[in-house]
Amino acid sequence: MNPIVRWFHQLGSPPTFDRFAARWAPWCWAIAAVLLAVGMYQALWVVPAERYQGDSFRILYIHVPSAWMSLLVYALMALYAAIALIWRIKLCEILAMACAPIGAGFTLITLLTGSIWGKPTWGGWWDWDPRLTTELILLFLYIGVMALYASIEDRRNGARAAGLLAIVGVALLPVIRYSVVWWNSLHQGQSISVFGQSAIDPALMAPLWWMVIATKFWFAGSLLARARTDNLRREAGKDWVLRMSGEKS
Image 1 (cartoon, rainbow, N blue to C red):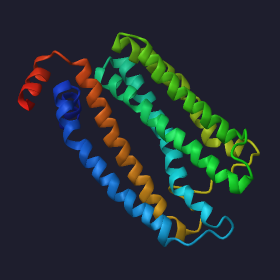
Image 2 (image 1 turned 90 degrees about the horizontal axis):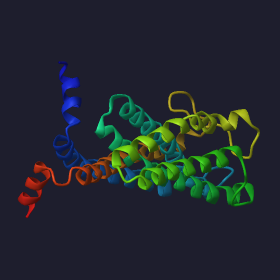
Image 3 (image 1 turned 90 degrees about the vertical axis):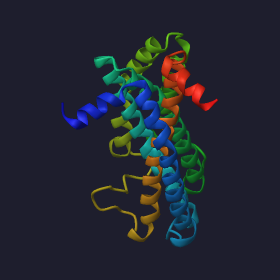
């Protein structure tokens, strides 16, 4: 068996995943904290004010990474759910359900910062703009996945039902992504490109990339920690959990 394939196969074992998550979650959080500190320092004190929006533009350093993560986490949740439904891999069920509250948090931050940014820019806290409205629907989808998972007593059946909802909801992601292209709206067009040229002044971009990378590490740490908790809850009473509890005591 290919060494990489064998490693992923072994990682699917509950005790192996527990050790992996316990080891790497703190490292992910530590790296995220450093990157966030660098990004926020540059965003608040290094980059100049934007020509037209003044200092209010600085909220983009939170808004844009959160918006990107709200979509990325949902796509990852649906991918884990699909793998779990097709190959019955329990760890993927756990990871999919662990994604939901984290993604909901990023989506809520996106909506709140978007409203704060919209007040001086558009003159109001909220407008039923296609981008804002579809992002709000995404939040409801996350809440629906969490609620469905919690409402079914059997954890595996709950994860499968919630995972199916997550997969269906993937259809919303391209609508959110291209809403500013398909409809005329208050929300500005796509101005930041990962691989192409961005419309934003290059002098303002460095803090954004620090924050983008930081949110990835923060998500990884949170995902591992949440998945580890759910894994231990499901495996409660197993010998390896009891041995681990005995060693700690």
